[in-house]
Image (cartoon, rainbow, N blue to C red; front, side):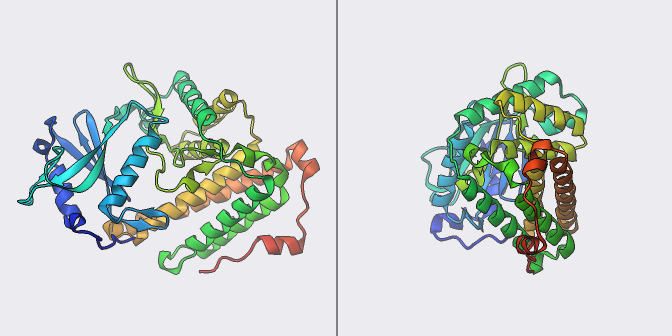
Length: 378
């Protein structure tokens, strides 16, 4: 992924100049003692005292378009609005980055031409993020109960975006095949066999055990879209548990079954070595939401999300900023494909031992299996 040439004069202020400016403590009105900068695939984060600022990169990838100042402003406003659903106390406002006639950058409102926008947030205590707490083995039952309750409340109030059963099955098939095609792109140079195998088995599972998914399309919501442990704040003495950093740029990527979102969070907890915690969290969320999803469906959803994460890891291979870490990102993509294969194998075993599913299973003939498991073209 490469930055696209800017379309207007305001955007001509180089990203390097902006990040260098934002890395200096004395440029912030509240004068933090120090600033720590973190580069992600799509943005720069600046931790400045008790505040954090996000600067989006001028990138274009599919439905995500941050190429102009106006588009980044719109994305920042969407991020603010959408993330206040789960973290109202964290997302404060958007801040203009200005430039004077003399070419001097400033964070003071009304000073010169706006050359970019930032999302200003309250900085969260790192030790209370779920990924850090898992590493420290400091996650307690009350922490999980708070998160389950917070997510249940969110999904109950999130805008419903239902699909018919037929529409949902077709949607899942399209997504599985599209992910396979993207992962099979020649420039990514991923191992072809694992990609083809996991796509074939996901499609075959969907064909044989689709009755387990009946009614799930009616549960789709405008959800979070990226429910990972590093986005989950467990709360502390002063602040409630919350979840940050939802996907703001494409509503279709947030149109999900809440069970799939929880399955994704459980998958990522498992990858951090917390399989027991993941199971506990799944149970608490099911009870809080009043939705006892079959374990085979959860495993199928885990496999799907693992493929999505493999694809996101692979996209880093196209970004020059991450070129020196190409081996790491390729290995991560393959690691997620391994997770996807283990999860779909688990979904198969669980479905076979589910008494209701076994009675209702749709047989997959050789002809139908060939139709389901289409080859992935590189």
